[in-house]
Length: 146
Image (cartoon, rainbow, N blue to C red; front, side, top):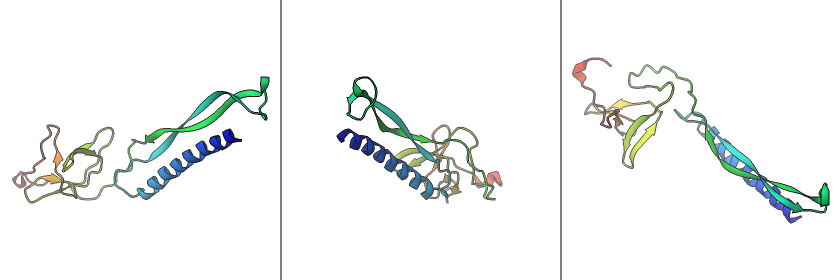
């Protein structure tokens, strides 16, 4: 009886984790550049467990537990919708935008940018977008239209 409760509890814990992941996906359905996640599960076999209601030689068989082993993030491209804003950009394929934040360099696929009063390309939070060399991207207004 104790083993049956442990097996059921292992499954219930993984189902709760799966529900948390689904809730997070639903909450972020309209978040720009959000990548959906799905849970990864494995089966753990505990060998040579005895139980009166088991079948087989000597009524000994394996018990099967469920283990939450991680999360898979879907990195495929989402829909790209033109906005008419010359500073809204999207990445098709692999890659990320590097952004300098107070917590250090971070990576994002959200490409909604603006230009601050110094001509630096920034995120809506005011964090500078970095070039491949790691320097903030500065636009010169004398260069013409973007």
